[in-house]
Image 1 (tube, rainbow, N blue to C red):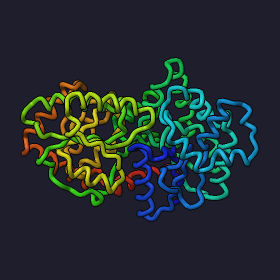
Image 2: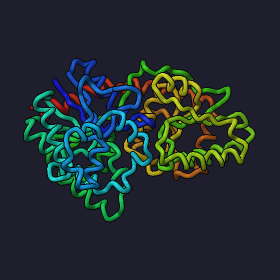
Image 3: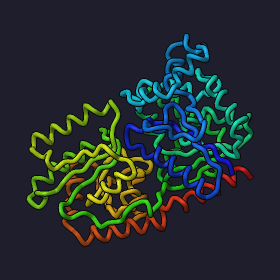
Image 4: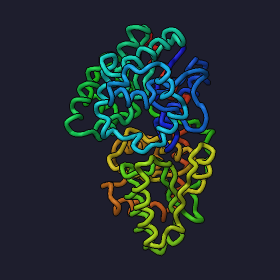
Length: 429
């Protein structure tokens, strides 16, 4: 089967669980013998070399679509100018700019993208469809998220293949918009959902959220969790000398980093945690720099910086060493999220989870039996849950072993990829 997987590039400046999910999934399809390619949009997939497949270009280059949306003059620019704005050096520069992941201020562009041929990016859509028809000729096209739905109708009609769409954290983007835009965008996404043959949510929790927001019929909705290859992660029991709390995600306010910092400061007042460390990785955008500095100053005022490690390298090889140094991992996302790939990566490495009772976190922790939940998502509740677990070595070891086994049994990406292929076969039939 030939699958074209269309994903938004992010430039590689921070830990993007959705992006890592996409790359691992395509590799898993290939290992199963399928002809799968990644087709990036907006930005390159990473800043470190060309990670696209062969001669696959970046479609809907971020600089081009922004200029065309904001300035009508650029909607009729000559080809040489479009090629300049789509050049890899310029796109990599754009990826480093602050605000590259913000929805606020991009409401009109989001609407235009969802309008497809009727939006200001019709030329880019024609170019993408032509590439699919005359270069790739897939059996199925798969969107990595529902913000790409504006392309579905033309792809189905002109390429004459079914379209599948994954669902993960679209609500984070839409609900961050100006209030006057949110209803309009959800209504447009609901309308465009009719052009899709199947939706695949990453958790039962998020399937329910999106069925309600987009009015998706039950027959179109499937749930396939995210997985990893267990053998890519070195299993070790939780670190004990010294103990360390880990954080793996984009370092930003929305992901609850401040709650974790404040909980760490609270724990350090207890003599039992005199040697406890906080280890942080995941990178950030330019928007997050000021926020991070505010948190570091808090730690400096308490003379705790010698117990804090900010690890800049979050590549797969570096993460194995990062996980080996941890006793637990906590990413207290303020409103929860649809899944959180870092959870499965930690479990595969033998690191128990301490997560708020929000979003899909309860679903994953109950399925894995590899962590604990706390409520409400406050500094005090998190500090209590961390203290309770860190002072119970037998429970830590039990959760560590159970979490690893669950990845082997339930969250092995090859087993989950087979479930996704079954969805493809169904829509093709």
